[in-house]
Amino acid sequence: MIKNFIQLSDFTGPQLSGLIDRTIAEKPAYLAGTGATTLPRKTLALLFEKPSLRTRVSFEVAMTQLGGRSTYLDQMTVGLGQRESVKDVARVLGRMCDGIMARTFSHDVIKELAEYASVPVINGLTDYCHPCQAMADMVTVKEHFGDLAGRTLVFVGDGNNVARSLAVACIKLGMKFVLACPQGYQLEESFFEILLLEHPEADCQMIHDADKAVANADVIYADTWVSMGQEEEKAQRVDAFKGFQINAELLAKAPDNAIVLHCLPAYRDYEITDEIFEANATHILNEAENRLHFQRTLLNALLADGGIE
Ligand code: CP
Ligand code: NVA
Image: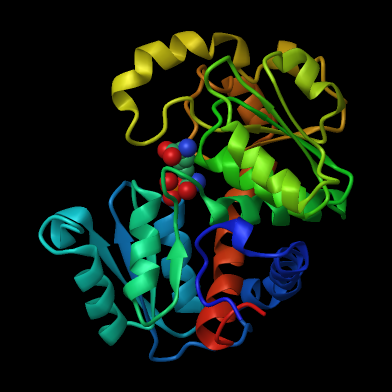
């Protein structure tokens, strides 16, 4: 039984597909307002070192739908690791709350929270990975195509936290993962080596030519070129990523039925043009909404059921 949701590599493919299928199955009842309220009197702490729209709101609304509540704590208030040690924050929140969702810079901080909290800890993004996002993306892909195995997801952009979680999700769910990025912005070789040891059948690739990368894509995925915390590198990154914009010329090289997803927030005319964003807005907004539906499943699994089997 796994009690925390820290990184997708902690889970098996069947565990991940179980969460995806449960999300799709339970979504209609919660949309109709008739879903089970499994967390009455429970409180989720939301600890943020970085800004957020989707992650904060999806967890808050999910807790409301489940009959519980949440408490938002920003870094100005808590001073995680500054005003107070991570270990003490974890132990205190564990005494008062029923779960902790945290968005931190360092991945080690979320692991430390999980080590010392007596309640489930959920990763709401670190510099290393963004597992909740990748799971909502997989829900969106499955709803659109009806299946996952055999599909190809092409991430065009930076080998960042979102790309890393998508790579793990794809490999565990039988999809092909392609990262198209400039030289110097790929995911670390050691990350793929470990994944391939566990999944020798995995189909994954990193290439530096976006046109070639999208040729067989089912999903073309965008994220910012400048992640939170990298603001000082903006000029250098905008220059490096010039050939990796998702625009009409690139989509002309992709199959007609390929969809474009974006985890948001989007920076138009950097990683994606307004034209392509708006042409795919339904998919991108379904994806954003699925953050709520997946988060609710995750809270049900960790806080109501006691963990992921
Ligand atoms: N995609 C995502 O995590 O959005 P927020 O940063 O707004 O939470
Ligand atoms: N890679 C982005 C994702 C935002 C949801 C970041 O870390 O800022």
